Image 1: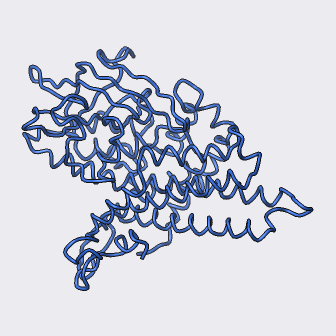
Image 2 (image 1 turned 90 degrees about the horizontal axis):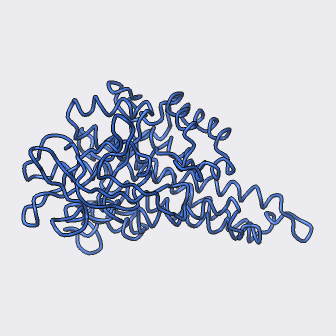
Image 3 (image 1 turned 180 degrees about the vertical axis):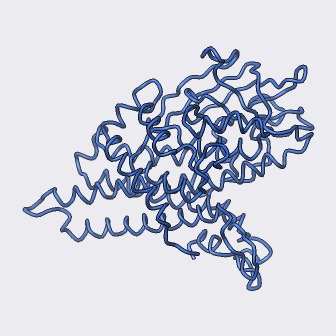
Length: 433
């Protein structure tokens, strides 16, 4: 593995950071999240038009930049550093890869170019609290998380050859503004239910809301991550790809593959936020004086900051490795082909969320009485840390899933794989080896 970034990757980081430093400070973030859209639409258009951010990982044939998970993760690290409120995760990390993987050629040609250009935004819709499950981050996604034929969830049925959706979902990222909803639904009744992904255009050609679709922005502690409740009442939808005819293996496998990349990007985003919070805290303790000297000169403060620095750097390494592995670049020992490391994304996400939580908590503490005020900048990071773990975790389940995927408790026995079947770095890291 070559750990050095290319000149192009470094340029993506530098350009994006320079723009966000000018346009996305704490005051601008607070102003943006209080708009009806929940983000600065002018800034989003600039990021799309000048930098091609939403199409960074899409093929050039569909108007994208043709980059991979590593470049997308680097971009997410910079947006996380600024706590950028934007539909980047829903559009570029979740919805677009699913459309690309499952959509028919005419569907990809109709949806992906406007998504890459920033003309449309999209998001993934799954039932309440099931995002991590749908992406196979906290457990296998072959269960009935999308409805399973029972009441609740989201159900899909065919009427005169057309698909209709009925159900509801909460905690949908940017769901109140997304132009395209990629909806995970079950069909076939209880005995023969299967999971499908269907695309819904949120508005018609005249700009009015699609009949039967009701979207409500939810109140969230972390306003930089807007969420919405989606209600579907006999809403027309278009199936992504051909009808699987009872076999939803392609859908669940695609969701799991998307989850690996999404975990790497979200881990990098958390690392960026943690790094920014740590930098702000270090700057503060250098200036704040007590007993006639900066509080940063006290050994107890230095030790706490040193521990945070180590945690952030470890999480950054894990996030970079997960992004590299998500691109299928991990060589299997003794084999010539590429083999992604299972569980790398979930483990990196767990480590990054834990690092962000620790840094955000210490930032509040080390800012003293000032840091405890709800309006202080430190609380933007604290809210992000708390809400991301609720949305994507919890951390212990992410780690348990990574250990399961790595075969840590497989044939090698309860203590891990045997000597002839090493579990790999992910498995060792899952237990802190």
